[in-house]
Length: 154
DNA sequence: GCCAACGTTGGC
DNA sequence: GCCAACGTTGGC
Image (cartoon, rainbow, N blue to C red; front, side, top):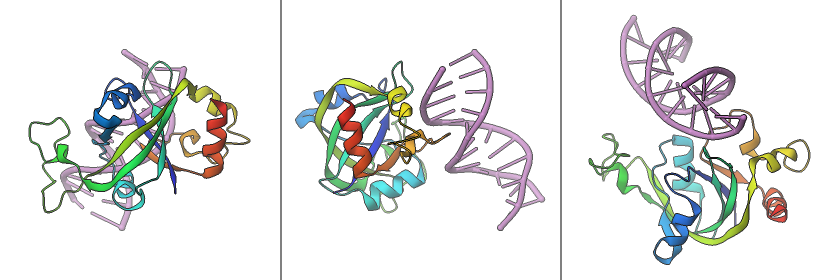
């Protein structure tokens, strides 16, 4: 089983939105970056677990955990001309963009903030991608060691 | 709202 | 294939 970190702006989709979804499960749609797309399509497997990270908000940080319940399949929002994430370059034959389904495992009792993560950037979390300067990738792998450490911070 | 960082696009 | 222009991300 592998571990990941998924970023979302809580104004668009927060951990509470996932908690309120049917079966606490939702498709992680709207990813429009090829590197992240490749991970959704090829690398992320059923049973993998992820950190749900809130970005571009008052308190950026990890808000909880999810598990992957369905592996990569085409992102329907890219094929819907009325959808804000529509991409004219995507077709049913060549869908271009992919999603996985995620199910909420647990919302943290409190957000483990970016500040806290960063305070360990030169020691325990030296390899955590999200702490790398200028990192903008919305989906990144997390090592088991970093995963365990971040959970211990809650 | 600002701005650094970085991905994508398009002209050549 | 290069690279400048442009758009987006995301923290502050």
